[in-house]
Length: 586
Image (tube, rainbow, N blue to C red; front, top):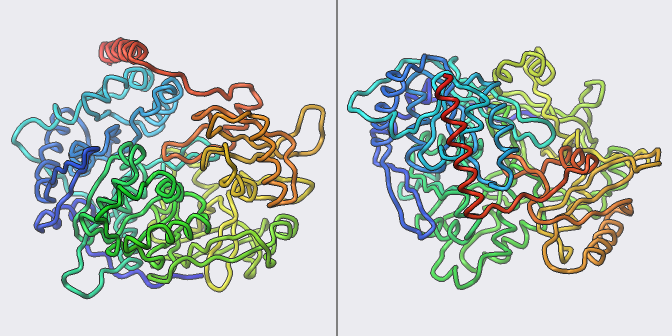
C-alpha cells in the first residue's frame, strides 16, 4: 500500500517553524485541575525559548549535545524544549517521577536513558528536582541538573542556525516488549511528519473554522509532543493543554475543554475513551457541545470496536459524531503516524475467526472484531511480509513493514539495533503483526507478545478483550501470556489481572476463565488476581507483558509501595543527598 504524495514541507526546521508561528495570533493555553487557564502566545514562546537558549550557552551546552527534559506539562517545558533546539542542541524528553511507589524502578530506568543518550544536562523544575537525585547521581551528566527557571534568567537571547539533517529530537520507544530504545529523529523527519498529519487532517475551507487542538497527552510521548504540540505550530493554531494527571483524576475536563475552546483535533489512546465511559457523569456534561470535534484520533494501543461504539452512543447527545472517530497507527520510529483511515468516515471493523487466524494466519469470517487503522499517510508505504521477507497477499497475517520520509535516522548510539530494524533500502520492521484487506491495515498484535498454544499463534488481545466486561477486573489492566508451567513441556495460557473491587479472588478468577473460554475456546492454565498498580507499564501507560511474565516467574510481581507524607519526606531527603554527591563529584 502506498499513501498520497507528500507535499513539499513549508519549513526547513522546527526552529524556523517556531519563528513563523511567533508572528501569528495563535497561542497555547494551559488548563489546571480547577479549570483555570493560563495563555502563552506563540510569540512569547519564541522569545522565552531564545532566552533559554542563551542560558544554555552560558552554562556550557554545546551544539549537538543532548539535553534531558524532565518536566510536567507547563510553560517551563516549552522554554526547555524549544530553548534546547534554538541552542543547537537535541532535546530528550523523559517522564518525571509520577509513580511514587516505584521510585527505585524509576531511577534505574531514568539513569539508563540519560546514559545511553549521553545527556550533558538535566533540565527540570524545582518540584521535580526534589526527587531526581538518585537518577542524576547514577548517570552523572557533564553539566549536572538545573531548573529551567535558573537557566532562563537574563535578557540576552540566542538562536543557532541548524539544517534539516540535524537531530531535532531523541524520543524513546514505548518499551512494551523490550527496554525503551532512543529513537533519533532529524529536523527534516519531524517536518515531514507534521506535513503528513496536515494532509490527513486538513482544515476545511471555511475561514471561521477554529484551528484548535486539545490534548492531555504527556509531552514526553510522541502523540502529545509531535502530534499535538508540533502540529499546532505547523498549522499554525491554538493548542489547549491539560496535564495528564489532571485528566486521569477527572476525565470530564478533557471533554469540557474541547467544548469550551471548540476543539477541532484531539487524540487519545483507547483506554481514555473507555475511562470517559466509566468516569464521566452526565452532570459534568451540562452545557457541553462536542460538535466541533472533527478528528477524535484513537491510537498508541490496540483499538476496541466495542469501546468506539459505546463512546459514540454515549456522547452523541452532546453533539459528538461517530464519523469523527479515527483509529490510527504509528510508532516512535516513524516519528508518529504511519496509517490513517479516511477523514469523516468513522471506524470500520471486520469480524474474523480467531481460531483460523491463530492456526493458519489467514482471515476468515468470525466473531472477533478487528478495527481498521486505515491506509498509509502521505509519503509512506506499508507492506505485510512472511518470515522469509516475501510480501503477502491480502487477508494473510504477517510482519508489518513501513517506509517513509519521517522514519528515524537510527537508534541513537546503537548500530546493531538499527541494522536489525532498518533494511538497507529504508524499510522499517515495525515489530507488529497484521494483514491488509480492501486497501487498509488491520493489526493483530506485537510479534514478541504472541502466545503459542498447541501450535497456534494467538494475539494476547484475543484473550484480553473479553476481560473488559468481567466484573471485578480493572478496565484495561489484564495481560495474557504464554508460559511453560512447572513440570510441563508445552506452553500454556497465563492471565494476570488487577482486581477492580472487593470480591473474592476465586470468584473473579473463575469468571475470567469462563470469559476467555467463551471468546476463544482456550482455557487458561493459570489465572492470578493482583492488587491495583501491580502490572508493570511503560512511561506512556502501556502494559509491559514480557516484563510482567519475568516478574511473575521470578516471584517479583508485587504492588507498589504506599508512600505517605513520612515516606515522601524520606525520599526527598535521600534524593537531596544523592544530588549533593553528584554535584560534588561533577
